[in-house]
Amino acid sequence: MRERGLVSLELQFGHDEFVSYTDYRKTELTRKSADWINRASRALRLSTCGTISSATLSDLREKTLAKYNCEDSKSKVLTFADSSLFSFWA
Image 1 (cartoon, rainbow, N blue to C red):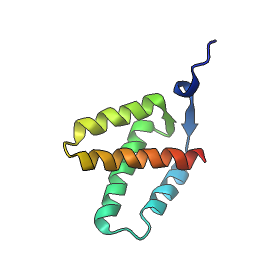
Image 2: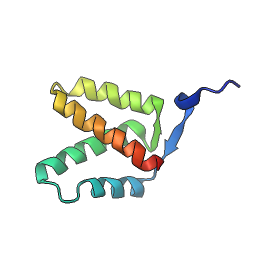
Image 3: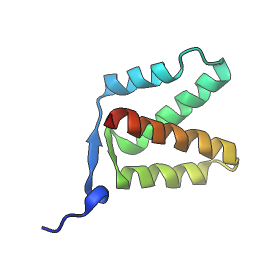
């Protein structure tokens, strides 16, 4: 079988780990900012179902770009996903 590099990587995360990370990200934020963390967290959780991969991140990206018109809103959701990826990978 031929190697596909990063496209074939999958990262699993558990519910408790994800909730803990989301709570950490909301530490000392305003209610409005925490609301965006919750929205982004939910979107990531629903798109990935516990597995971060090229396919699930593409799904998140497509759904986010379709859902929001505001560039800031898109950025908030996708930036949360980026930071989550690096936190879980570390």
